[in-house]
Image (cartoon, rainbow over all chains, first blue to last red; front, top):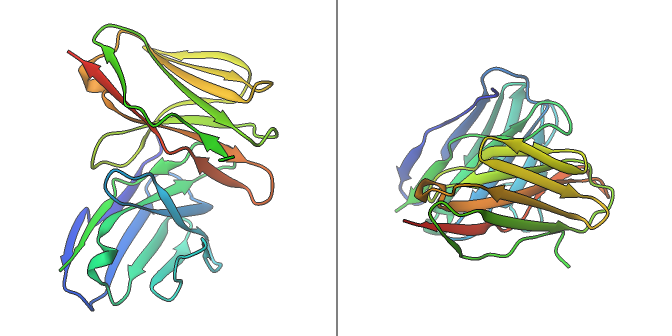
Length: 115
Length: 112
């Protein structure tokens, strides 16, 4: 089946630093990747949609200068949380889409804690 | 009206019973529907996909789709405590931009 690898699974950083999260589709080419954030006991919140070779589309209320997304190839997308603050602490999950109408496949998520 | 609606639960069922999870959607043109399971602290995992009206079975899971009534459901037979999780319904919306729309999820508790 389709496998999406997300790294790191857990990261703790100091306030003001930047953190990069990688999302890779291991056995298929992902035309589109999605980045979600989920706070405890809340539902998935879509942050942005990225297509290979083009700028990401951010959802309303998500700061594009704070959450930098790079979709450099058909198998890799990265999310960089810049100048992280404690309120950015959350569970970040990527997902990848191969063909249209096929299911989304999720990475295992990254738990970010900003101290 | 939300685009994809689910009862947040919790839905409690005894072990061995059938758990029935429901989802309604607003975009009549939607063609693809998915059920995901999410354990606490983990990312969602795909359980079922369904694209046409009727039932689709996979082991203990049955997905049911009724496009005329705009609902999709998931039945879990012989429920086990390990099935306790949040179940997310996802629909591909076709109005406006093409995107996956998730419901807020139904929390299922299977009581031993």
